[in-house]
Length: 339
Image (cartoon, rainbow, N blue to C red; front, side):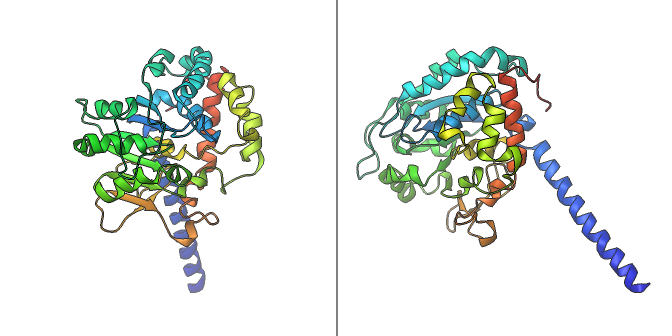
């Protein structure tokens, strides 16, 4: 009987621990982030229209969630192929679905407003110094950063970090107002000088250096059934409004969306704490820097060779089901989503 009591006690502890984990996840999803009603100021810097169609996928995703954010700028920062016109092309498609989206939420930004805040950034990498001359994009970052708004301005960098580096160089005081989430890897290679300039001269910038964690968005996690990268697109994007049909033509009809975790980081979780859970992953603080976070190097969080990726794909079912609801709004298959 004694052994039985111990066994029952052990089982009870396991059950309690599991329930506590579920409750913690529910609290995390329900009470934090933009989905819970916290509005964040956002500027996106993207190389959309360049060599990889996943920026277009990520832009479609962002526009479907744009009712949750105060979007202040969309900047074309290639600095190779890709121009402001490529941003406008996606907004033109968004305009076709705008009447349907408004039925789900009355805070979707108008296409006219989105065109107005779209700006052209640098079209060439920075020289060795890491900065060159101001651009329309870098000037817009400064202008938005200096608004009389107590909230931080999140700079979500999906392309080269050229315009962010230029803005920080031209007005270092904006560092106290901005938070940079840089999807690095391929993007960093396109302008190493700009990144090295920030790294060497502005290490006090609030900065998430996301080099591999983002890959969890499309790699690993629950991939069965309609959650597979290709099946999800075929069933839940294609035929769901103009944006869904456009999405289905990209990346051979498969999800990649490597830049989307920068947005997902704001959708759930507490953005003030990059070490906490979020759909965009969690990070560790870089030693010796007050506000700089990097991919978590723990072996158990790698997927398979990408450090930190499992901190994203653990939420794969949750974020794809929510994305599915957003596509439903495009095709008027859903009314206002529940908070």
